Every structure is written in C-alpha cells, then in structure tokens.
Image (cartoon, rainbow, N blue to C red; front, side):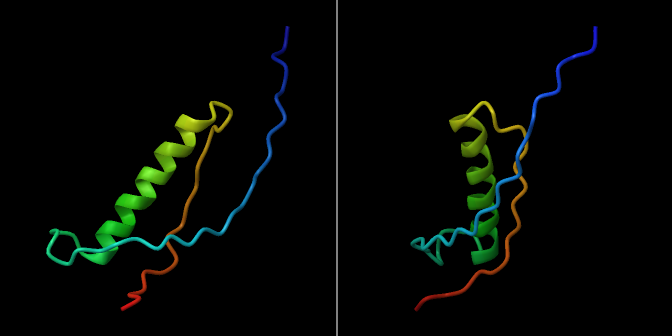
Length: 65
C-alpha cells in the first residue's frame, strides 16, 4: 500500500524586526541578526508541528540611530 501524499504549501513572509542593540554585548550587528534568525526558525518549528521546513534569508542589517 502506497503512503498517502500530504499536500504542502509554501508561505512567504517579509518580517522586519526592530531590536535593541548593545554594542558592548560582544556580538556584531550581523551576529545578532544571525542569532535572531536561528531563534525565529526554531520558534516556527515549535509553534506548529505542521511546519516541516523553514527557509529564511537575512536581507539587511541597518542601524536606526
């Protein structure tokens, strides 16, 4: 008996996060952005067990001084 195929969707979002940054915290802005990206990926898997893949792309890191 063949397994039943489960339909899948690809859903795309653009998300901008404004975060407080401590330049003395030991991470560069790019490192902080990569950490946030990893945490976002992990969170999406935790929130919904139907999520089978998360593919994020860091597009920009800008200072808002």
